[in-house]
Image (cartoon, rainbow, N blue to C red; front, side, top):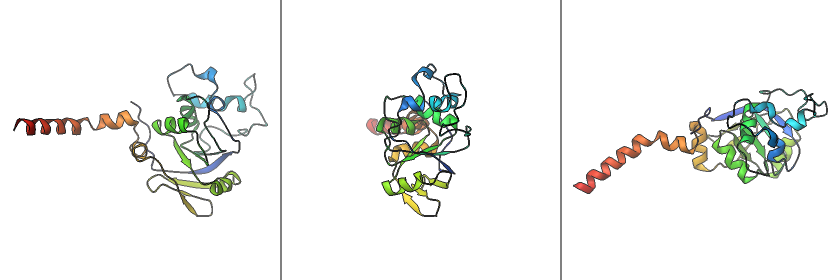
Amino acid sequence: MTSFQPLRSVASRAFVLDRNDVDTDQIIPARFLTTTSRAGLGRFAFYDWRFDEHGRQKNDSPFAGVEPGDFAILVAGSNFGCGSSREHAPWALLDFGFRAVVSSDIADIFKSNALKNGLLPVTVDVRTHQRLLSSPGAAISIDLDAETLRLPDGETVSFKVEPFARRCLLDGVDPLGFLLDRIPLIEAYERESAKERMS
């Protein structure tokens, strides 16, 4: 069971990563998948883009000058999170400070792993996506309750999250945690059902 900070809304400047087909090995290289703990994985997020082979920061990296926690919303190119399935990818993004990823197209397996671990994947229309990609650092906000994203000019656009996944994000639990929280209700239902069968 995994619990995380409940997510109802997130507001941040947008960190724009205008690259398509960013796969999970770019999000966190395979050589860092030696732990089952999510703690500290943020230092490996986009590692090969941020550091050279000697561990020195790359000046030409899109992450040059960016520190963990500077941004809570990542605006990514299309087909973000493609490639192999690994929960370490959303773990690394979360530990780096991101709570939401916005794109016109997010890979299904990555989206599923993100939702189960407290990272909100937001899919928007192409027009909205292009506006966001052209506005690095702009202030945007996401309201998961209302399923809306507010653009820098105040315009709001709608997005959809699968209802059960949305409930889990709002409650700050994964699917197993959601069920475990409801064990008392399940047991009460079973007791009442047993009484009715015996009467």
